[in-house]
Image (cartoon, rainbow, N blue to C red; front, side):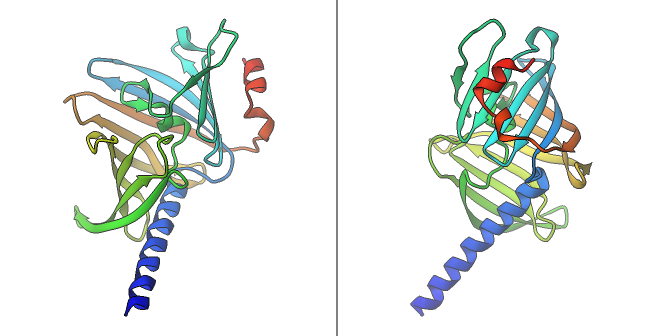
Length: 234
């Protein structure tokens, strides 16, 4: 009886991990890629910004600010869970936290470290019906305090493994914001959510919409993901 229970628990854990990995592969390629993102925020901070992201796996990312012109030249570099910002006319890179706000409702880690596999331990809480479709609801627990959010509740379509919704929580178990994955279209050779809508859970009407476009798979050598390379990159 105990052996059967232990086997059942192991199977459930493997199930949750597999669902999370497949869902991450729907959102972004495992290979190196480049994608452009427009972030439009409404509420106390109105306006839009554009970014170009170069990413390889879940441990190497460069985020370039392309608009507005006044912020062009600012660059973020993520190596593992270490994040730095490079500012024009500033000689030293500045260390940042993944959970710090980048713009609107978007944290640094939302762009620089967007995949959940490796950052969270998943467990299946339940299944839910939404608009006639069945979703697995996963609870994602942070592996340490260096990740973007302490806990995530994550709705993933049963069968397709498409992400539907994520709720992000603080260390004190307070809901910070909710993200909706929308507008599934071909992007980078696969059907993916091309729009993310992030809504502030504490301030009504505060939200940011992230539109992804022009994704290209690219060979990205490890040497570009270094502070030395970023300092030379225009």
